[in-house]
Image 1: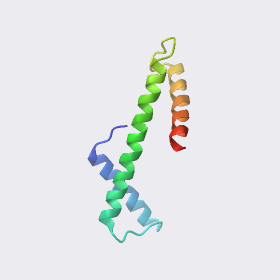
Image 2: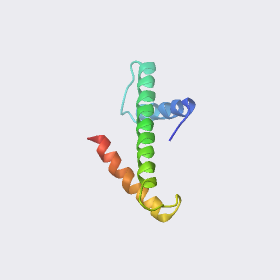
Image 3: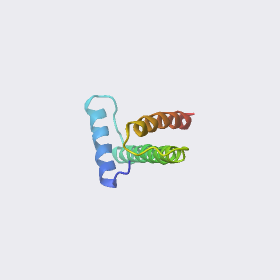
Image 4: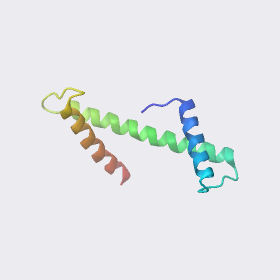
Length: 90
């Protein structure tokens, strides 16, 4: 999922605000915490994009075509996405 810098920034602010309001974290250096939160979000979404590319390639390389948007395509996508996500965590 490709998100703009503005959306990443908005999410980072929401995360930090939520953690602070619930008393789960204190940020002595708020600017640094914000930068690290943005970086973590960017890394997460980049990994998701990479997995998405791998999964779409797997589905398109099947011996028979599976139309995107079909129930079968959705099931295969979820299955392959979970498999690739598990591989990435190791």
